[in-house]
Length: 426
Ligand SMILES: *Cc1c(COP(=O)(O)O)cnc(C)c1O
Image 1: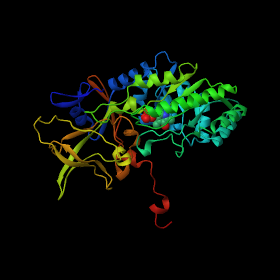
Image 2: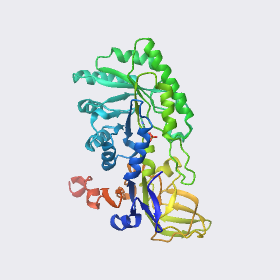
Image 3: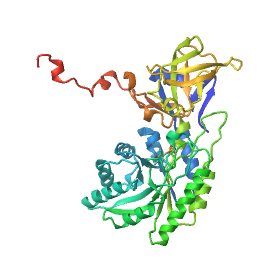
Image 4: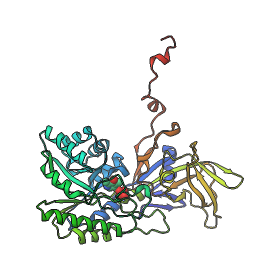
């Protein structure tokens, strides 16, 4: 459920027509609905009432400072995967004691910054990382609060580029090798062993892989307990899928997911950490773009937009589907014809949709990509010399630019031409 709807024939975010934002900000732009973010956060966190669960929003899905500040106000913590994301979360008002740090390749600088900030938990993904972290913490005279991320070897039925919990994935510690690493962790001077973590993948629409992973995790917690290693926290990662098709809004309800966590961990007396990302932000955002040309080719027609895969990479990267909505509501009897929706980038993969059935949309008109609030703006680049796409946050009848488009001068400012090139004589 989201707060994007047609009113008086124009697609609105809450009470704001997207045409009004386009006039003010220019296109393309991302627009987020604060009511939708709040709604998703509340529905998810309320599903866990009574389970001693702590919700840490996955910042990699949407790191905009205003989005993080909104979630911080609701009590969210953060799951970060780099020192940069940790700084973004802290700057947005999420205290370090509510931040969990995940990722396979954390550097010394990142780990020491996290320790200095007083981070809640570092999810360690390998023995070398565990040893390095212990050394850094000990040299700082502190203890690192650690969970070991295990790889439960379950197949999440999702795109191969977003599955993470199989043996062959780079993530986590093989669950069979994990007990030895827990034993080691207890002996290392800089480690304060707090728990175990998993994250099996993303956009998972079937609860069964979660059930399997949780059952394996439960077994591990109990086996460790039997040898005197008591874990107080179980971090379950994120991964719950969202509906990308507006006419087929099927995705597992948070209640059903919460029933699984209760079943697996309810009697263990542990604190749960949950790291939803897409579920909170996905349907809370759209990318709005303008049609530049309609090109009639020999075998097919093309809707050429002013946004490209540098602005929204999911279709090119993961073959992802995004609903494409004309901002002006078409007449109910408008014919729907197949058309390829493409961007301006000089790459053949810059295609948002092939042979999508759309009503006639004229040059100059606006279209909106739905479900673009997660893994959208955060993955944008400046490829083809294009400015990073701005972001707008709507609240009721108001909207604010929460990340502005950089100026050409700002884009050029980081680059320099060395003197030897400026002066041919030297
Ligand atoms: C990406 C990621 C998440 C969020 O995943 P979603 O599918 O967006 O919910 C949570 N935890 C970790 C460790 C991640 O890498």
